[in-house]
Amino acid sequence: MAPDTPMENSRDQILKKRPAYTDILNFYVQVFQAQEENRQQILMAPISIDPSLVEKKLRHDMPLIDSKEFKMDQNAAVQLMTTLCDITQDQHNALSRAAVSLKTAITDSRIDPGQIFDALLNSDGEMLSSFSETIGIRSEHLIMFTYLSMAPCVETCAEQLSRYLENRSHGKEYCPICGNLPDLFFLDDNGKRHLKCSFCSHSWEVDRMGCLFCDSKDPELHPYFFSPEEKEYRVDVCDACRKYIKGVDTRHLDRPFVPKIELVATLHLDIKAKEAGYTGLSDGIPIKEAHVS
View 1 (cartoon, rainbow, N blue to C red):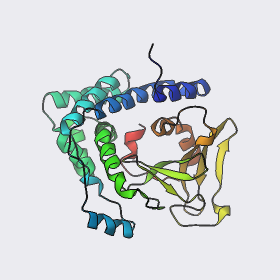
View 2: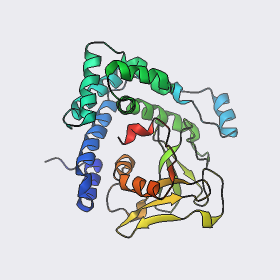
View 3: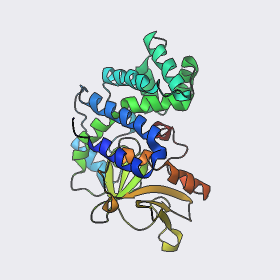
């Protein structure tokens, strides 16, 4: 029997403590594994930027590119979309019905997946709503399938672009690659704080103290909460702007750190934070629907 992958190992360790996550974690592990397999099939020219433009952007703390500038291998992304539909149709819920409808619309050429990818990259909500109506599914379901299908291409581009950031500090709340907001932070072995981009999954280091989003420096306004049973997790909140962000202290992990898995396995923290009156950093941003739905 082949040894478990880090992703499977992480899932199994989490489920020992929180079996209620069995269905959703098993589903997302299949999704993330399909993404990794698809990533090996991507064929596209490396993304690059003129060095003089890079220097200008870095000097002014500007993201290297806009989200719409990410390159896509359309064939690989469409192939992954149909694979994800196959994985999802066994869920026996609203999402599975959406998967069947989406795959049918692709098969009978009622939609062009490439145009849907472009609409998401361009944040064209009107176009995405139109495609949703044509297919007969909810917009958030279409956004989820679309983002998950294009994620391997986006993340491949982000890795290529990260070479421009070597030995450069950023320290801002937005991603230095694409300018999107983070969906998770983590503390490394030295206690340094890093943010993970909600769109391209790039991670970057930021200051440990203070609110990232309203520049408040008063420590009394920045409490955090955690459970003694889950020492690896914490939620940082700001009582000035009423925002929150989930985090993982990797120093307390007894399993491989797989950010995507940890993001899904902490939905209970989102509920707790919102019940306390805080708002997620990416609430209202369509891409959030792609991660957990």
